[in-house]
Length: 402
Image (tube, rainbow, N blue to C red):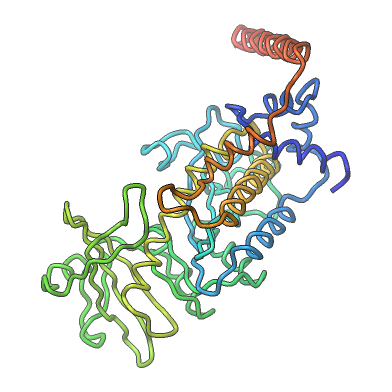
């Protein structure tokens, strides 16, 4: 990366870590002391730098500090709500961000969870097949590379896991929700590489029991488990204490030497069930499978932290390049907070450890606070209002031309 975009990228990451409410090119440029947002916009749109290369550097940095042979990779997707039809990959689709069908983009992410900490290490933008991949004119307008074609969300997860393996990332397990548990190709890939998995499946999934002679739905199987077979385990700490559930497991291996299980989770209060297909290259205790299953919550918390703390979803870019660059720089900002949190000594018993949010608050109070002269603030007030007036006039002209 040349000196100018490198300097601008540093200012951009500082802006993502700052207390600026909406972390757009406008607000970050104002905070950095620029006269207009052009340098920040150029960084995301046309400057010469490799977002994938930066992603690889962020991953290597995180693994150097957090790497552990028993780590878990977690794959999941999150939505980015959008207006209009031009943002790359946008369409009306279900997103857990809103809890309903909304106009949105969907990004598939890979998180790294180890005893030393957790962080996002990779990302892929999901392109819907009919509304985008079957319409080359839209792909061209959004700057999507020619070699990029349609890929399901599990296929994108497989790409990221393969990249982690190629980069010699240490991990022993993969987990994900029902979208990923239903994909046989993902499970086959992991077994081929000797990577264990605990993947969620639906209640209508059928598994083999009785030495492979019987095929039965997992919810029917759960009803046959005696009460004494359910064991209480915590699958990790939550906001209100340990996440304790009742768990049962059933061996489902159909060939000698295989280690396959159906893992079932029961809510102690509501009785709600969740089901997991599990495989390991070696025998493991129930508590190990429970811990891996509980790792999936980490990525949801990372999404919440990324959007709330470093503006993961605050971008105003529409292109393929712009999306990947903003998200990569947000991942870098989140990595800074993650590693600062991981390096803190154990807290005294009477207080909780420093959180990512508290570390960011301290960074802004002690390091990143920048006093801007009044004339700079007034300049940006005039610049914003002038740009907004110009945009309003253009909007009115378009409406009158229809």
